[in-house]
Length: 455
Ligand SMILES: NC(=O)c1ccc[n+]([C@@H]2O[C@H](COP(=O)([O-])OP(=O)(O)OC[C@H]3O[C@@H](n4cnc5c(N)ncnc54)[C@H](O)[C@@H]3O)[C@@H](O)[C@H]2O)c1
Image 1 (cartoon, rainbow, N blue to C red):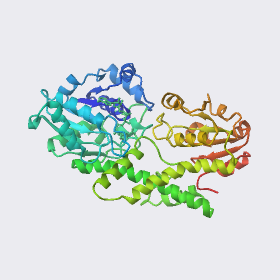
Image 2 (cartoon, rainbow, N blue to C red):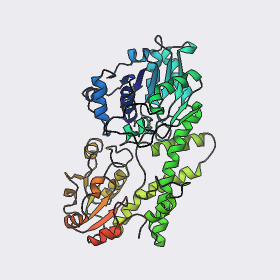
Image 3 (cartoon, protein in one colour):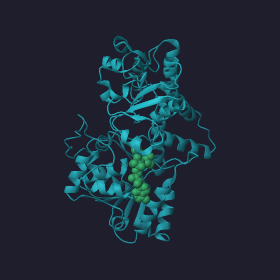
Image 4 (tube, helix red, strand yellow):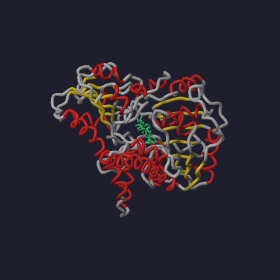
């Protein structure tokens, strides 16, 4: 099929590359010129395992192009994905200006070519499919012929860091459409994934035993709601683990044992129960805010969702209070920070807990020495106002520091022997914001160790 994707971000670029790898003919539309230049050279503007190799293959096979010019790519497309950003406005409401721009461009290109399924892949507020129709009409300059297009919803569940894996081997595909022909077309588009009939790329092998991916076919509103409900649930699970961690600290329980003990119950499940500095990233905060906003627009105050957000906000502060307990005065002290990204294997700093912790420590007068395996460049580029020292390696960040705080659980950090950490620090104090280390191992290395939810 001919597929056009608006947006070359985490979702758009990965979706485009994967669909091209599945033998579709893909054009990605992007407004940022630097991204276009990079991608044309087979370089990914984001850090994603397996993406560059895949891009190089589909570029060489002439199945993938990227351009600024929407015109021809819209006209010839069978399926058009809208995968642009939907950042939050001050009110919590999602900012749909980029979706609107894409929809206007699609409307303008509807004059000829095959009937199109226009797919909202971006996370958009409930009811946005209707809005996209209105904007398409605006772009067209009136009502396009009835059979020329339909709008469907296909929410995205990929995780940054494993985006290619999640797109090739998803837990489910959700399709929301009002027109049966749109559902049929999208099922055909995704058939190789649904029945796992494609040849897996060497870099991202198929998990053992996966032969079929479940498909959820539903209406558009329910599909949009599924995405918000999924993210709200995952964020709530982490906030729940953190609430339990805070109680554990007070009563002398060990939260990692407690969450393992409850996670083995199949009704609960062990994923997303790690206590620590809390959740972040570009999606959870924004999607919760948008769901809360929508809910309140309809006269319902979602108390549980509000608490999920509050618990998370307080949890970021918990690392700072742990450092205060350990060091007493923070002013003038050098503190090493390991990990900036909101989770390992990504350079994404959007709403990363590390940003909150670092800002708070700077306000308290600390001098910060940071290291992250990939996100240092993003920090330098996007947060130049943060007055920190960028260390060239994890161990270099420790020099002269009176404490280390770990905020992202990169594998690289787990591999550093704790004895070396103790040696390099000016005072062997560690505040482990991700419970990466075992307290007994830290004690053995002579470290004064503070975790989250463990006494
Ligand atoms: N990042 C994730 O892990 C993730 C997961 C699931 C869903 N989502 C959702 O998917 C959507 C996209 O997220 P993302 O992380 O890929 O965003 P992103 O910011 O990484 O990428 C968006 C891209 O769209 C481009 N763009 C903006 N306006 C455009 C236009 N008019 N035409 C063409 N390109 C345009 C931007 O320049 C940018 O490159 C959001 O709604 C997000 O909530 C993201």
